[in-house]
Length: 232
Image (cartoon, rainbow, N blue to C red):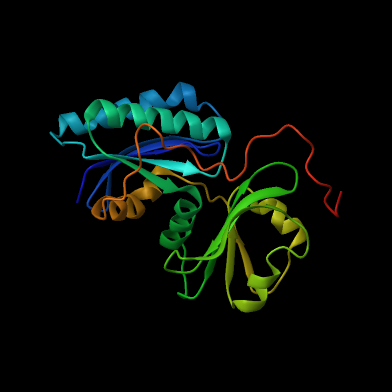
């Protein structure tokens, strides 16, 4: 398998991981703040120094493309583009919501029929979200969703087990209650959880354009007030 440098900066955690053959060789991470610009270069250097010491040749750079923080995503993609261009290696873009689903998939005891519903906090009662089955195929497409008691009702009526998680799920817990919904705390998108997705993309040669690729913001930044929620 390829030696890949993975970069994740979509939310308040900043993380970088050097991986190969399904294993984490080196990684650095910090949570609880948005210091990505200050931390990311040092984290990347740490992993590149490790690769150099072990005589490993970096074969690709993978970066989380969002959705998430506008600033964090721009910082991560800019660093990834510069590194891939300088080293002449391919760039891989990974969906942030699938990274979170992989975190849950590999850390929780599961039955195999769960639906994974990651949520990235947007603002007020809004989240960026999607829903995936166990094969990480979408059963609800990515969207910006303003939460209310009727959110996800189609999923709740169709599937026996639904797992909700991510830094937006605390807001969902306030308005959504169903016996087949389980909220999993403390799930963040991290570079160490990009391994399977990045290696699959590399094996399939699913690369993104170093010059023209952009983050997946889901919606453009706007300073206007969101439409009123029924709970406000």
